[in-house]
Image (cartoon, rainbow, N blue to C red; front, side, top):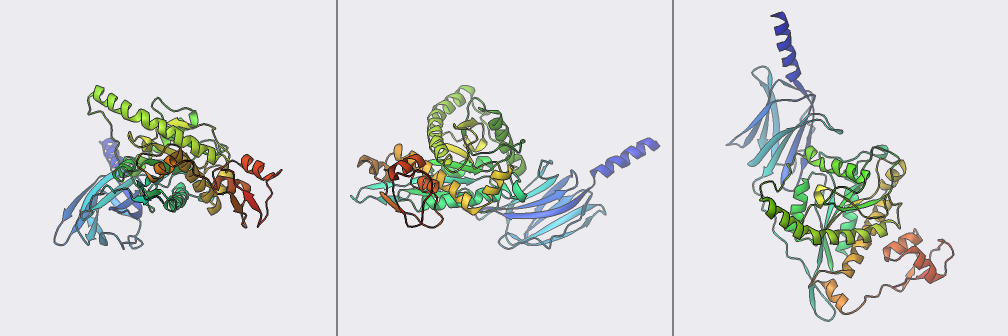
Length: 439
């Protein structure tokens, strides 16, 4: 009996948990509240009206953190209260400014966090995403053509920091800066428009990222990452397209597995074709993905060539792996690894604004060249191509801070052709010098 009592006591002890910290993120259509726990817990939530409240009961939990540090502005939460229930359980009450649609789930420990309780509050008054009509551009001859739409995806975000690299730099922050610059380049380019899948520090589910791209009628989806590898000596940039038959290298296989686990961090369930007839599912995927994958590989090849002008390449061909965000059957999709953030040299460069802009410029130039080669029908770029080759700028005046490789990347030409056109024996250039740019 004594042994039995001791065993029961031990079970009760292991079930108790401390709330070590509380974090809050605001996304465009929801608010996420995360409780960092010392161990697994049991919980339940329920709503109350007049006034609107959400009650969170956590069994045998102790609060070791303060709610006062949470920034509640721009969220549906007006105030957070807490107290003991039945002398053992913790009750947390969210006083709400407006009604919400709540969801809760627990997450197991991963390489970044321990046990967590996640509370998602979805706004009830948010309108569904409306399929945007691609904006129209008018050529000098008066002909009309729509813009090419680019979906720019910054990986990770919010509760998912991605890889942690040089001096604690977080992948989610680096890739958001690169994505914002890429978005700016496309926004200033005639015949192109772009939008950001996530505009701030919040998490978007991997499957939802492709849903957003489809809802906004994207012509191409590009996801920006700066990942890690188990070997810190791994370095260089990579470009990936979807693989239907597995990864093309050990690195690609490992990275795909790691990125797909982001939904374990974000708490979004996977979607499969398991509920479809096997024959129908196979035909649908084969027909739609074969053409899409071909376009993805071609676009990825152009981006990779431009990335090679600003960075060492990890592999000199477009790799293929089963990244979840690339599994859109109707939108060409690529994933750009700007470098290995865990490598001291790559990580140091990725943390700088100058290199972030170089990466964005290289991706922009590669995608622009791809679409000028194979523009979608009825677009401004397609009409320009019908009128004949578009000549690039013929001369460029060097400004302070310019380098030959950056000038070549900016004008989508190789460094060697730039040297040859201007009879340069080295890469030395001076402010005010005029370069002839080959078409």
